[in-house]
Amino acid sequence: MKILVVGSGGREHALCYSFKKSKKAEKIFCANGNAGIGEIAELVDIKPDEIEKLADFAESNAIDLTFVGGETSLALGIVDEFEKRNLKIVGVSQKAAQLESSKSFAKDFMARHNIPTAKYKTAFSTDEAKEILESGFFGDENVPVVVKADGLAAGKGVVVAADRSKAVEAIEELESIAGQDAAEKIVLEETLFGSEVSLILFADGENFSLMPPVRDHKRIGEGDSGANTGGMGTVSDRKLLSEEQTTKIVGEIIKPTLEGAKADGFPIRGILFLGLMMTDSGAKVLEYNVRFGDPETQVILIQLKTDLVEICEAILAQSLDKILIEWQTGSAACVVLASRHYPNKPQTGDIIYGLDLARRHENTEIFHAGTAKDERGNFITSGGRVLGVTATGEGLSAAISRAYEAVKDISWNGLQYRRDIGR
Ligand code: AMP
Ligand code: GLY
Image (tube, rainbow, N blue to C red; front, side, top):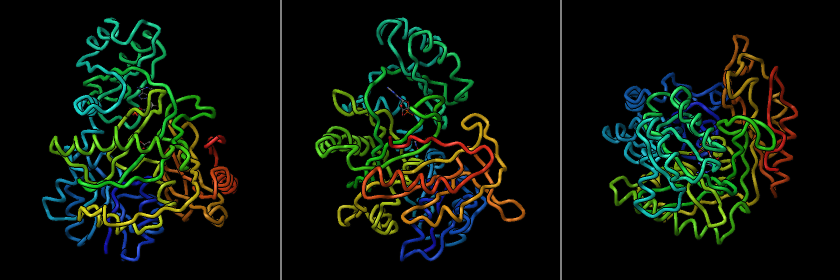
């Protein structure tokens, strides 16, 4: 089969790595990829938002299967366009993508289907948002409130404001941070407390299959300090959720979500990602994503034993209930190596040293996120998050130590990473 992966980050490198292992894959293309992906796939110079061009490419190159990495393409309707042209593609429809592309849509959906989530109000202007705060709906002025831009904002659209004055500040700044379109509506939410877990699943419109649970580390600094990022590292360990917790999440959140989506006319076929807060009163949904996470995917796919192409075929044939998806036992960890000044204005163009050495560690994969090659063929940094050093181990601490062992081999000018992933 000829397979096309859409996207260019560490997530897409992990996807290409999994497809590469498939007995059914003859050739892998990635639009638009990065230098690491370029080692295992043919890079195609089409961006994830160029839907027509991607469909043209799939058509003229007789691509047998397309897999969409990120939300941008899904929100623009890539799946609808491919299906219109009878091209096989794994991902959700544009309608279902609203669960991620509009936070107010997702909150209304959850309210309608009784899915546990933080109490919320949607405002249609900054003045209205401030009025809602003053109305006391979220309690007095010392109560923390979460301010969210409605639309896609690459992780920059959410502020957990410690008190009312910080919330007002966040409301006023939201448009300039998240962009005018994303901030056209503002969702205000009660702040939830607990530990966060990401739970991702394959869904075929009828059936679903859970992946191992993951914890992301979103802040730039150790001890969860500093600015939010796309994710500085992840761990995957079965102990993140007990069997009892998982059963409750399936019953109270996953089934109502899948059934609700179907009832509302947008069955979820592809990937669904639940960002959960494990509160004292049970799991609550912080957000839906309609795609794999980054860097969640790296720790998930390194544990996948089943052929990813077969899973995709089962999703398309609506027969996920007929295959057994197998995972390695044990744990996995991914440490993100970022460039200087990430997440603000990352410095790029630095030569990356030690990749060959780092690659030699057993049970370790180096997934590239923001890399390119210079004219002499050296790998150089080309983005904020540069590499995801990912390892498996029998237990979590073994996986973490193994990942950090490989990290030691890698260096460049301005390299930064967190030393406390999983701790
Ligand atoms: P979101 O993109 O909606 O998942 O928000 C990004 C991050 O903001 C989450 O991973 C949480 O750390 C935090 N967050 C979002 N909503 C809430 C909430 N209601 N209570 C506490 N933290 C939240
Ligand atoms: N790592 C968080 C996300 O992919 O949304």
